[in-house]
Amino acid sequence: MTGQPAAPQPPAVPSPGRRPGVVTAVAVLCWVVGALELVLSILVLVLSAVPDALPSTLAGSLFASSIGYLVVALAYLAVGFGVFRGVDVARVVVLLASLVHLAVGLYTALTSEPIAGILSMGLAVAIALPLWVGRGAAWFDARRAPRT
Image (cartoon, rainbow, N blue to C red; front, side, top):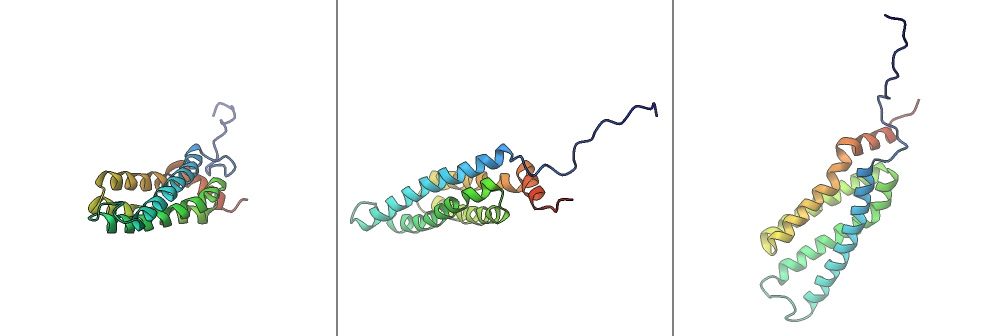
């Protein structure tokens, strides 16, 4: 007790106003991955309708994977803006889409394209994880917490 005032402490709850860079990166990644997977899945679906355009041994598994990637692409594109704005429902939809993305990536890795499947699984984790741990999770939690 020297009579000096205590140094101000940082707030215990992160500020809901300033979006962390990791959340912005995830939103952009949702748009980029969604757009690429949309184009590629439509391309594979079109090619699967053309006789002999795809190897017959892979045509069935590529068709199934493309349907899964199409669903994931549409989900990522739909919720990108919600993640950007900090909508908690968008974070949940990204998690669900990433779980589907992970499953489709595993299916792809086991049935047709191992490297593409592994990369796909990595993208699924890279998109979902930052929203649920660290600064991303703290920002979403602060936006949801009642303000006093």
